[in-house]
Image (tube, rainbow, N blue to C red; front, side, top):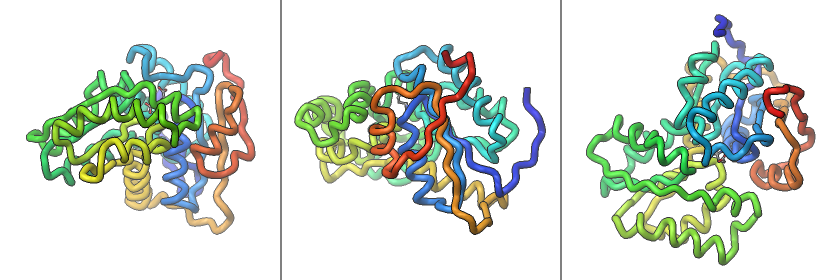
Amino acid sequence: MKHTVTPHPSQAIGVFDSGVGGLTVVRALIKKLPNESIVYFGDTARVPYGPKSSDVVRVYTRQDTDVLLKHYVKMIVVACNTVSSVALDVVEKQSPVPVVGVIEPAAEIAARRTRTKRIGVIGTLGTIASSAYTKAIHRHDPSVTIEAQPCPLFVPLAEEGWDNHEATRLIAREYIGPLVEKGIDMLVLGCTHYPILKNIIGEAAGSAVTLIDSADATADVVADLLAGHSLLRTESEPAEYTFLVSDVPHKFREIGERFLGRRLDRVEKIDDTHFT
Ligand code: DGL
């Protein structure tokens, strides 16, 4: 049920993702808004969402949103591209506080900056199958041609830390090469994990292609929204970060710290039967 609440500037920003990947979005948020406290929830017990049906992702999304609302956040950032593609309306319906997904911010930048009117979009199977980026880009410029490519192998490669590995280079060329041949000049990194592989994706795309990082684009939109709603935190004490997960898998801290770019001091496993 949706309640009416008035968010307060001192509350934290809520961020959720299918797992650890959304920490790339948290990293971008901390860089852009260092004074904001953040509550992050990663559904590490049920990740990945990318290969799952949209019906299942929508059910998970409802439960993920509940976790954040229980922490009285002032807004919700849907860091997961798959959720933003197939279930943003679920969060919007449920949330009494403002909601930002990752699709629209990156789509807007890519549509505005393309010169060749050909934009490449890479993401999970779910994100690409939904055509969410195509629809969002076409709302800004219907004349753009979209070259979309699912890149499911990038998720485990990023988690494995293979961001400078020949195997990843080879796979990147397989995925990205055909998009470049079609004349794209923008490539949207439509998945939480892809910023980790930015160098290799950039090499495969070549210098004529600009990479659009949906995490950075989203952080800019969040900053504008908070300012527009007079919700920017004004306290001078340092911001607080809370990291919640539905499971603590092996290597979670190692992967998480790499994605976040800083230490993960405290990670709490939530106690909720929905997630077990
Ligand atoms: N977080 C997901 C996304 O951005 C990638 C990982 C997954 O498949 O759950 O789409």
